[in-house]
Image (cartoon, rainbow, N blue to C red):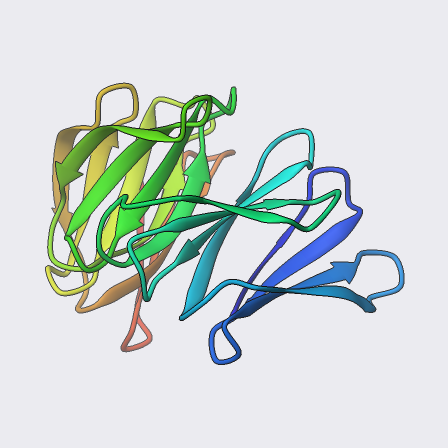
Amino acid sequence: MLFRSTPDDRYVLVTNWCSYDMSVVDHRTLREVRRVPLGRYPRGIAVDAASRIAYVAVMGSYDIAKVDLRTFGVTWIRGVGSGPRHLVLSADGSRLYATLNGAGQVVAIDTATDRVVGRVATGSQPRSMAISTDNRALYVVNYNSSSVSVLRRRDLAIVETLPVCGNPIGITYEPVAHRLWVACYGGEIRVFDA
């Protein structure tokens, strides 16, 4: 399960791993208003700034769902790679970035054309990802490589690879002190200056 509020605070979106769908919850009443079927293992969610499109990584596939938040219709970005897991959008919304757990890669997708425009191998089983507030860097945890890849966002060049605790699973970028917080499966947390 993963959840994300829409920028307009109208909905909370929750991916349901076991029931293969996404719950759309009214932010004010906390009542589910819709269930959107997506297929095996929906995971990461990114929402455009206008709160019109929710992108959902469907980890048991090669595809990313695009959910229209007005009609709840679903279209697809097909064939991005094996095991899409986590998603982030660039500040201007022109690029969607996805970790591919099965392929060991991160891809950049042009949101105007829904085409993959960049691809890089980061490590074994990339999972969660964060983007810096200045929109210049992506930070990716590689679960089986026990590392964090620092990518230059504009061209996906690997700037640095940081060794971390075993099986890193989560990452967040803290914008005040410009730090990365990395959570590992065994319960350890590491903090790095970004």
